[in-house]
Image 1 (cartoon, rainbow, N blue to C red):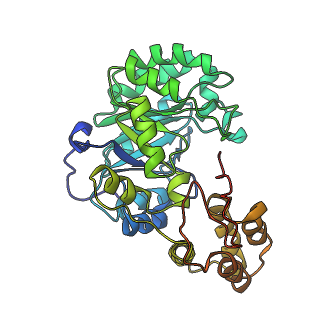
Image 2: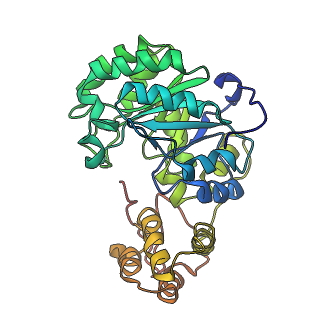
Length: 354
């Protein structure tokens, strides 16, 4: 069912803050879903939401569980509906359908590195075929009457592929480009090519959003200042540190920045546990679901990643929270980049992507 009341689309530039970058929740499949949106709304929400990607093929219809994120958006902040696919008529058809909902606009995924996606020449796999990307953009731009954005990686094999991609993007009247500063082959390895994002900002005639390793107000400011980007898209950093959007806003506004403790992190995990739980899900199945989130939260918390390893071995709800209590029930500061282990060691562990 579509929204019954008409949706008044506003130009994207009207949502841009004056003295800081636009803050965006990244699309992470099966992670940043509606329950997570409801959670982040309470902890300090972004300026703009991106949905999980709608899978587009010849027989596809927009998935109902992703449409719920649009229909039950917990805030009045705008939403970009992301699509992934390669069949041009189907992409156009789904873009037109999604625009009958209360969305700011449509985003095209050119960055997903999952092998199952790339094997179908979708997501990041499309970067091996710039001529196909060109054809898709040519078809989608006139079909999208709202904000049309693209999320891309630097290339499939090498960052050197980014230059011709920039030329391709500049030929189309897209409204913004999100650049994940890694290639598809680089997956989520530590190094992010911020110099390539900087080049995109300098070369393109529309806003560029930086994506990759934004974990704290400090890294947010450093990336913003170095690249000159107009927005920061944050995914894994928001799962690990749900206060990050609040903290960045506080830092740019010159207000005291909220500093959570490990105990706050433990309470967040419990809140997450309750918020994303489905009524029909068995406890052991839900513990398995939570381990997906803890893969982003737990690294670096304890010496030799003992917290993460114990969480992965937990087999019941009781055991899961016993592990959390053992490692997090402390009034020690939680720094998402440098965490002091509860064992009393004062040498911070490396963060998961550093």
